[in-house]
Length: 344
Image (cartoon, rainbow, N blue to C red; front, side, top):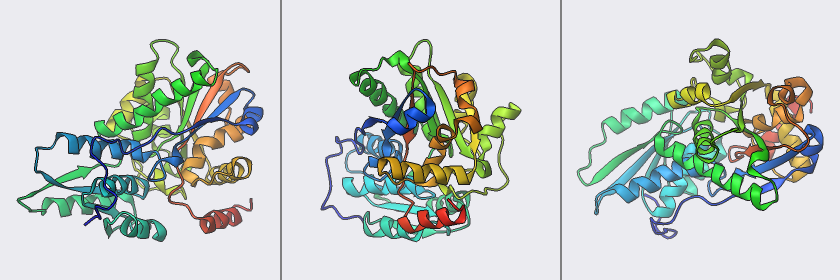
């Protein structure tokens, strides 16, 4: 059971407005303005506080008075942390299922910082999710309401992530850039929740000349990239990447539909380039992120290799926004290990 010592009123949103900053090193690299949206500063350590936090928040606002909800979340780490963090602050119990490969420090954090009940099961997220659903199917408590929190495939999750776009546009304008100068938003893609939220937000804010979404995955988890290449939704038989937070076998149906309807460039990058991007961001901005986040930056640190400038067609007067989505599954020791593995 979570502690109620840190509870906040349920009218209070469980996520915060994050900074949008100018990156001089990346702007020199790319040849136009590069802005970084610092989502790792969310309460849970990643953008997931918007989506999962919104799911928890809106559920609490709509439940009948006197309800006693128990939230259930499956996750590779970040989504579970966001759900558990929100539940902890609102004062409600949360059970999180993670694969056995989840980082030990993340498991400890879920239990010790957020008071969540943690179930470790299986090798990948899908295994943990199946176990969580099995547990929920036997959940029987007349006074409690069991609430399932999908880590990426839920309309409330999409809506929560879409709030990032409103901040990006308003902040860019306040910095002196026009909304029209933003030609691309680059984000990592796991199950497609963040991608869907960004697409929905951009559709809301732009009626014409919509910015392109550069949807980035690592090669071992490239289900959206393959789907776009083949023109049909692809489900991967296995996941092979150090960017474990991107380890969904397929994207949500909503994400696939939006990828076909909204201007989208799918890019696959190597694990090595994702780690290299993490190291460069650490050296240049003193920001430590995980490889799943580094993926969104990798094409912009390697513009010649991934040909993004040719495909997005940027000029020196344009701006691109890179979503620095999080780093809560990473430790300094694991980043050092990745550095040694790839001889960086």
